[in-house]
Image (cartoon, rainbow, N blue to C red; front, top):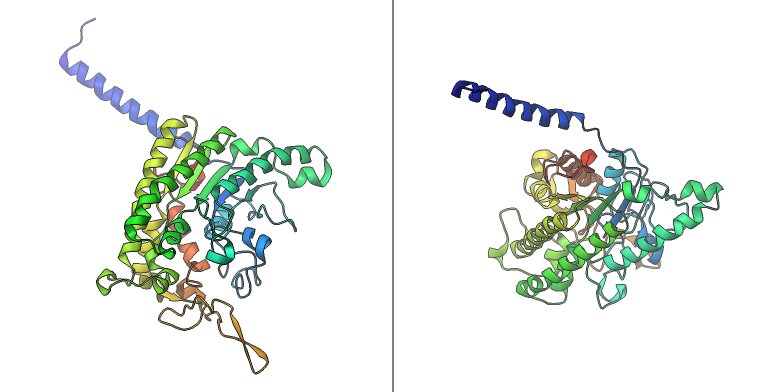
Length: 387
């Protein structure tokens, strides 16, 4: 059968239109993912009680805005991971290290405040960095994965409080870690070039952990990059920079440049992981951009204090590393609170000089949940699909 040029053109247009229609139909046919559990790894940006269980509770006034009391979080209320759980219809995550009142049926949180990707050769008391680095968090997960299935077989309450076997392959694995790896170098008197030198090793260790979890059945990964550390009072107060190194919004440019260097490397690692792990759906989430936008444009969104901390004591940023949030001193035989919280935390971006307020965390979540800041541009509730 012979076709004229016009017929071929019509057939071609029909084929293109049919292909586009099929693609649209495929997207429309996709249902939101139903993650039965979340397994989270990270530092204080997502710690829901790990460090508190191991080294003592995060003291008051942490937690007062939402929980009304300390709740293992280093902020006045909820964290990004809490908003993620809420959005997916899951309860807040119990910390793996917390043995009191925990429920692991919907996942577990292995994050601890002060954690790094690369193990630190110091104690928590010496440096402020947690000994529970990412590799240790994986060891905990590995043990948790195996033992929970043994415990479930006991039945009764044990079966109720432990995750089902299939949850491990259907869960969302979330990561928010890396900030402390950068600040650890600076706090050890390293230069910016020195910090950049070890970043590849840090990222290689991160890649290894993702591969380990994949080998245990993990398939869906939601990975946050690191934020603008040069906008955090605990960094700016401890590490002096030249006036010319302060940007238009009051942030220290050298530290933010290192964070962006880390993030570029992390994105490349994620791209490589997609090639190496054929059945994984990996979403890279650019929280740096939204955090920096919040600090630089915060006043437009009701945040009157983009750099000054809500809870602290003295100084340019209301931050003092020796008299932190909730700090008390003894005066004339009585304890006096010298690190009180502000009365309007919803107008502050920073809670205690290190961590964001609940209001800021909510703002950030609302801008990443739709996938507009992700690569690929995947909404949270569609993160089980490989693009």
